[in-house]
Each structure stands twice: as structure tokens, then as C-alpha cells.
Image 1 (spheres, one colour):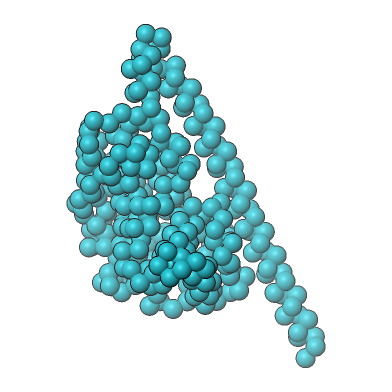
Image 2 (tube, rainbow, N blue to C red; image 1 turned 60 degrees about the vertical axis):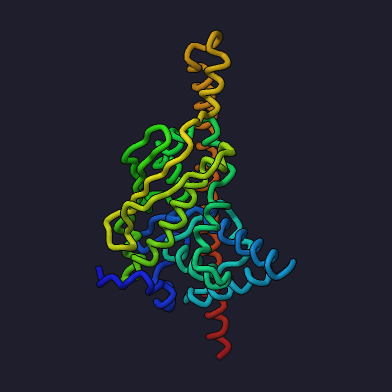
Length: 308
């Protein structure tokens, strides 16, 4: 890998994107580094922020500006995006594209802390909130690797170092494949990912159970040159999820709440299976879109050549 630049060198210095933003990568594998839920969260937050600060309609104009900036960094028009495309939560993207988008959002919002604020309010999708409802906060953090894959399919590595009532230590590392996409800008890109991820984690008690957000302390960070990002989260330990409350109310009728828990687990598995089916269907649709645009481009180029 090339020499890493300090974290104040952002990926926008790179110029054009080097990798396909969606579709398939250079090895022919489907690109699914970042969920469309993450991209839409950025778009929605930027649009709502501008509408609130500058007045109705300002947000939509800024999203058009964002799309123009992104397409200006994508050499092949086959991969150009639109506002509607970016708002589709079922699409999937490369991490390089996601970091270009994140940096542009911060610039357009005029806020270097855009990612943290956006993630705290928008990252936990209705699906993740629904999946987390049955569990205590401690259990949700214990399931961090499972939930993390909803946002970053096999592009980030998530680990749980410790979980106990009121305290959790969680880790995140970047895969070698994604590190290649970041290149010398790995530290700045990792900073974006770190800020968004830990802010989303801190929001879990509030978003899922209506409690106060967790407090986050950085133990290590890739942006500082460490091999992984590690955070200590602390929260009010008087915390029960749905399953615990059901168990206490129905202890006489449900032995340790297991029947209820098994029912919820079955429902979650069914919901997640449907989620993955939809995501695969939209991945195929993205591939179809790329193929159709490429054929149109080739036909147009051939027609222009025959005229000359």
C-alpha cells in the first residue's frame, strides 16, 4: 500500500474515483460495501438541514448540487447517479463512493461534524430499530457485529471486546479490500467511518428504547494510526428490553420467557431473510442499469462514428 497521508488529507484530493461506485468490482464481484440506507441517511439529513437553515426548497437544490459534484468525479457516465437513485435504500455502493459522498456532504453543509450528527439522527434505520426492540441495550451491543453487517456487508470487521450492564467495548477494523479503495487517504476515510459508526452506536439506547444516549470514549482509532477503532460505551444500566419485560410480567405463564423469545427470534429471521432477498434483487437491478447504459453508450458512439 502507498504511504498513508495525515488525516487532514481527504479523499477529495484524489480527483476522479478509481473504482466503480456500484455494480461489480474489478474481480467481477457484486459491490455491496455500503448499504443504500447509509447513503440515503446522508441525503435526507443534508436536505432537511438546508431546508431548515435556508428555507424550503434549499435542500433539494443542494442535493442536485451534490449529484453534480459526484458525477463530476465519476469518469464513466454509465455510473452517474441521480437524487432518486441515491435515495433508494436498497442500492449498494463501494466505500470509495461513500467517502466521496460523505466529504461532499460535509462541505456543502459547512460542518466538519456532519457525519457524527447525521449518523446520530439517521443511521439506525426502521429495520435495525425493529430488530433491536426485543433486546436490552447490553444485548444490542453484543449483537453489534450482526447489525453492523446491515450497513457494511463484509467491508468492515466488527468485534465485541466486552459487554456488561452499563458498559460495552466494541471494535471496528477495515478490510484490506476497502483499504485499497481508500489508498493514501485511509486515515481521513477511516475518520469518517469511525465518527458515523460510534455516533450511531451511541444513539441506540435513545432510538431503540427511548432512553438517554450512551457516552462514547475513544480507546483507539485508525485515523490516528491504530490498527482498529475501539470505543467504550457507557449508559444507564437500569435497562430492559422487550423480552425482559415480557418475562417478568408473564413468568407464571411462560417458563423464563423462552416461548416468547423463540417467537420473536423466528419473526426476526423471517424479516432479515426478506431484507436480504430485496437487497439482492436491487443489486441485480443495479447491474442491469449499468449494462443498459453501457449498451446505449456503445450504440450512440457507433452511430456518431458512422455519421462522421
